[in-house]
Image 1 (cartoon, helix red, strand yellow):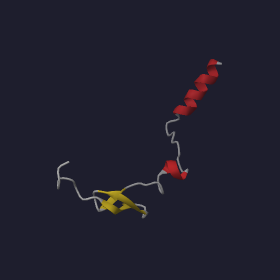
Image 2 (cartoon, rainbow, N blue to C red; image 1 turned 120 degrees about the horizontal axis):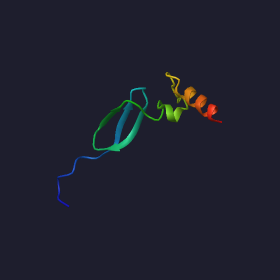
Image 3 (cartoon, rainbow, N blue to C red; image 1 turned 180 degrees about the vertical axis):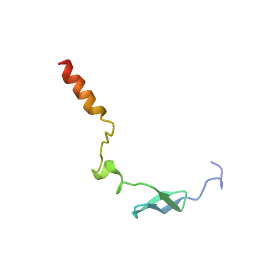
Image 4 (cartoon, helix red, strand yellow; image 1 turned 120 degrees about the vertical axis):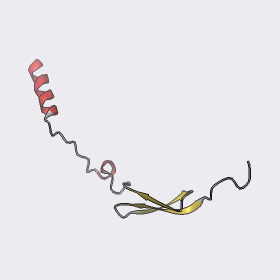
Length: 68
């Protein structure tokens, strides 16, 4: 490997989320800002919602019931 061509690796880099959570990670950047993390992501928090604003699911269920 060639010497002095690799970026500086920070073992205690700080990753900050928009929700306010901070994490200590290893990275080539000293500070990282993210929009979403495991503390606020709907999949991990159980706040996941399925939006059906057009009624497509109901229409599908009615069609399937009519076929039976």
